[in-house]
Image 1: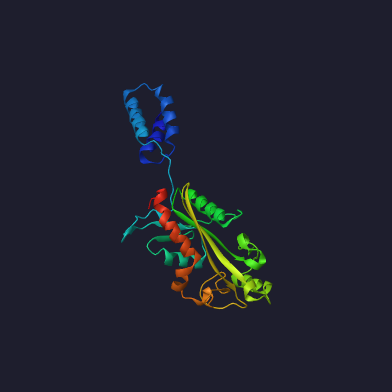
Image 2: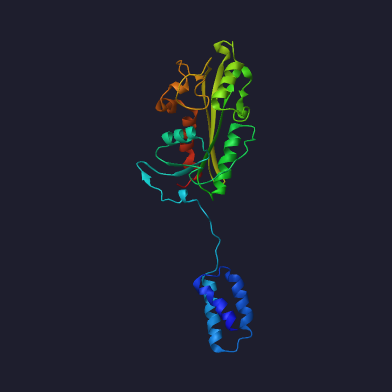
Length: 270
């Protein structure tokens, strides 16, 4: 009996976590107790267990538990960006500068989501909802984007990220080679961006595009992806623009602006 009491007394020091198991044991011992002081002791144990019944714990990454701040005209939101692409992160922070953009790397989330849907919109929705649910309903933005070349029947299209295993520059050189000798009218292309914002099962999605032409060689030092080979009507590639100039016309900016106007309609909570 002395040994049992010593073991059960550990409850009050927090050394035993499985309170329900100890409670069951205490009930069994209760039936054979003969002394008033021992009954009193187990009554205290029972009250302690009922009061401190284990509850389901929800673990949320520290980076998304900070207190939201208010900015002039709107409330700041913490938004998880479903990407570790440094170019996308930088661009999103510049465009959504009134909100706190947090990358997957910052919250220590390493996740690969297969982009196997037939459209840009469906892939963006899949990524945003999957990550939001994994983070217990955190607000998450994901995008899927790609290049469509008119004379190549929309190639590479929704397969933009998967048709070539090389670097962005190597992909660009391959595309230039495929269009070698083609006149400008056959080099029409558009860069498409679909962005989905999800909070649990609530989703909004927007799609925008930027039209231009494929160059005969890469030009420009700014930007990323296809920026160095997508030439605008003014004769400059996206990579020859400043970040502010690019953000003012980019399909990602246009899609994000559409998302912002729809947030209140589905009760996204900052």
